Length: 73
Image 1 (tube, rainbow, N blue to C red):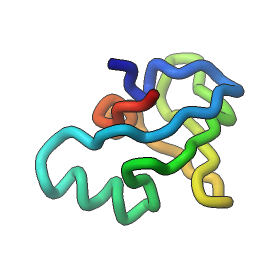
Image 2: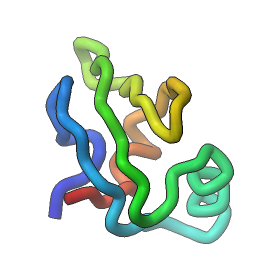
Image 3: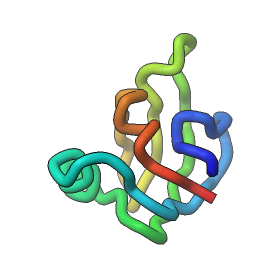
């Protein structure tokens, strides 16, 4: 399974599953990232942290720790 941190710049993916403890899942869902949401990868920093995405019409920067917990297809 691919995670959001492994997706290349310019790709559009769909969230399939959120992993991690309940506090982390809630924090990610509060950002608008839920199952079935399409995510566009705008930029990835040279060392992979953070990842800049476009989700639900707004831009969001995610730390790699959070992106590793989001499974996508």
